[in-house]
Image 1: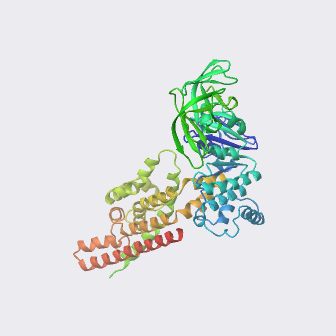
Image 2: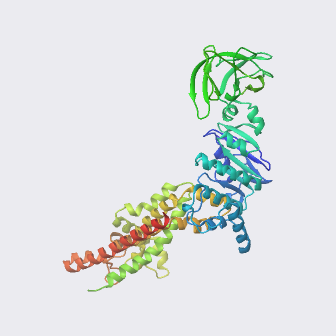
Image 3: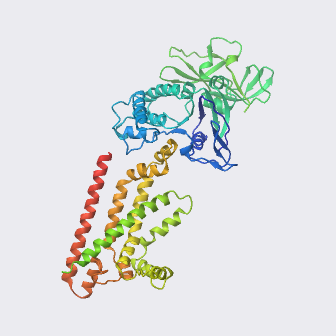
Length: 326
Length: 220
């Protein structure tokens, strides 16, 4: 079951969601690879799909350039043939387009090579060159880096940021919050086939308004919560009474990011004595699991010169507390 | 030794395979793109492969014989199928078509769907996708289907003898000639034809393997 509603301007728009949340299907419906049961899809004022008016443009006429996870290059064609298959214009124009895109994507000298002889990065660049020579008006990217190791991933992300400078309109589908934050302007959080929240990327990371948004923006500490008074709430899982601002009446969850918690030596406002449950050594820091009053563990991170003392205090900075009522 | 069975076999198999080749690719493409009734259409096309060839021949007699509606229609133009060279071709087409169709369809379906979707979203027409992407990438499967169909057409016996008969010099192929020779107790002649048929079959299958392994090498 998929039920989404959003509009994209000339911008980089991201659909952020867990696997199975329906973000890839949404993208496929826009491209015309999948057909929705009902609704409308409009691109630049052109109706691509409208179930009420029985309009369903074939993918060929939608001008939406879809980039596949596995690049989907034509295996029987050389790099040049791949790039030019969908190009329009005279032979002279095509030659020019080919030359321009080969150098833009550092593919010079590879024009007569077949896709199976290329590295993953080169294949992705060919796929981009192929879309840019076609008539596409918007780029649709389905988890563009998911098949790559972290080093290549970063290289290609840098390249993609460059491509986005040329190509102003794109929808990016991903489950990786960092990638989405770095590349996109606005983000829609998808959960169970529905758009959960749509907002600017800074707003959504600073103040995720729903549980799904909290989880997908990487908030590690989430507890169910109840409002007690104007500026007091009780975090049920953590067994803590916290001070916060602008608490909604229908508060359901409270969250705090692991790196926003502050380590203190003595009691203070919103500061609680914690029992250390577990210390896990991570690559460049310690992950410390603590709890208070027998509640569920809270995760925080400290650098490696942390000394374990029998009793530590953790401060929950008021301005860093995340509240959600959905 | 009368060589007409060899000539008739090669002629009917060549004509039948030419028809099967195009019909098989066409049907494979159509069935691949069917949204409904795929299993049923597939079963109808595949039926001649699993039915006893005599049953296929009998159905062809019923369907195209002089007393059938189609047979009567063609008789108006003085065209008769039964016990003619045309009947041998029709019988060979019907029994070899499932092989061509199935191998080609398998080759089409093996191609990553994303490649077709990518071409569509880029604006490449269905016609161009068929000629420039689908066919070239299915080439080894299509070649295999072609060789299998030809060898099947060459070895056709049951449907041919039911529908085209065993008229020396007209519809007598190598396989029906062997049957006739054994019936007449001429084992020498039967042995000679059996040897020729085996030799042809061997050459074709060997050629197919050689072509396919060469294809694989160029693809890897």
